[in-house]
Amino acid sequence: MQSPVRDYLTEVLDSLDAERGGAVADYIPDLAEANPDLFAIAVTTVDGRTYCVGDDEVEFSIQSISKPLAYAAALADRGFDTVLEKVGVEPSGEAFNELSLESGTCRPRNPMINAGAITTHGLLVDDDADVESRVERARSFFSTLAGRELTVDQALHKSEMDSADRNLAIAHMLRNYGIVDDAPHDIVDGYIQQCSIMVTAKDLAVIGACFANGGVHPVTGERVMSRRIARQVMSVMAGCGMYDGAGEWLTTVGIPAKSGVAGGLLGTLPGQCGIAVFSPRLDEHGNSTRGVLTFRRLSTDMNMHMV
Ligand code: DON
Image 1: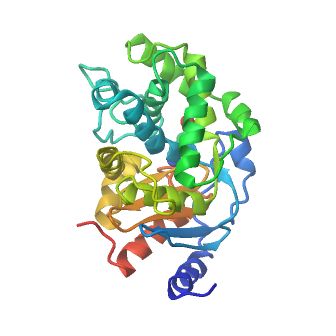
Image 2 (image 1 turned 30 degrees about the vertical axis):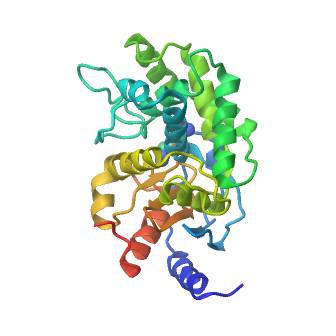
């Protein structure tokens, strides 16, 4: 169906289609096979209208965009005090796969980097949870937010597990410092299954709108998380979601956001909308090249900068 918003998004998509900068992630063997030319933009407003253009039905793995979602689930399952005791909220200023522990507490600096996300995954459900129950908690919560049943791509999970030395090393260090209790292999296995949950750009826009709408699902009207949790997650995304590119992102785009190495980029504009872009080529920070350009364009054209 034609609409002025859709026409505008089509124009943005067409204008950035020729952009070929960056490269698909290749440290996870299956991701190296991705079609680099795919490109989708989706927006869901807090009153539940979704506008999508391009390859908006193509599924890709959620990867690091799972981190803010799992953080919301862990806050709901364990409460703020328990989660904050284990994971901080400060930008690390380092790459996503650095250890980045705080001196003194040894907490990972935030839940958006791998060290913080591995810890957060281990907090899901309760102290007795196993790999299967944590992955199912993540999958079912993400499905509630998306408004459809999502699945874990087990072939992708295996492909990443076969080359997970760095995440395993991080998990060993976290256990050494008493931040996680689980066997490092188990916690990384569960975290990587969480990263292998498959979504579309449309799913991500709806998920973003759940946060932007203060925890109420924009389509079903169901409360899917508390207002306090939605605020906490969007705040951490604003400060830490774009890793060592977070400061530049906040000044140029000004929308809380999270990127994933499969090329997804999720934005949440409080009180207004969820925004998603999918395009697999990544820049030097591991953020989708066309995704960053699309957000810059939308932020400028529609005056979306938060401040
Ligand atoms: O743990 C990893 O390295 C991947 N499963 C996720 C990393 C990621 O998406 C970084 N974001 N841009």
